[in-house]
Amino acid sequence: MAICSNASIERLKRSVHRTSLAPRFGPNIYSAEHVARPKPAADLALYACARLGVPPSRALFIDDNIHGIHCARAAGCLAVGFIAPSENRTGHAATLRAAGANHVVHGMEQFHALLKFLTIETLEDA
Image (tube, rainbow, N blue to C red):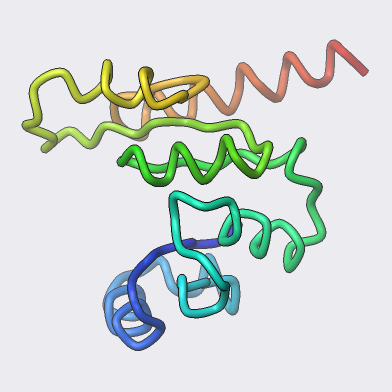
């Protein structure tokens, strides 16, 4: 797992390390400063995939905005649009779908259900 953000490295460090997420991602926190072109270009997703040793075709990229969805699709990753429970933008799910999201989930419960579905689907295809 990795965090990929257009935020600066310094801002990312401050933000992530104030939460309980930092240990979960370890060194896999990547900024647009690591690549030539920020999201929506594919560079950041491809960079993270290379660092994690995961082919983009086997990667899931979750984002709450269209720039991340475009990045994921351009890199060849499965693009998942995420809608937080506090989201108040009308029609945001439709916006993420129109941007190319393969799936849109509302909150972590739906995201976990999608992961379970995708895992079962992958095992059945094997």
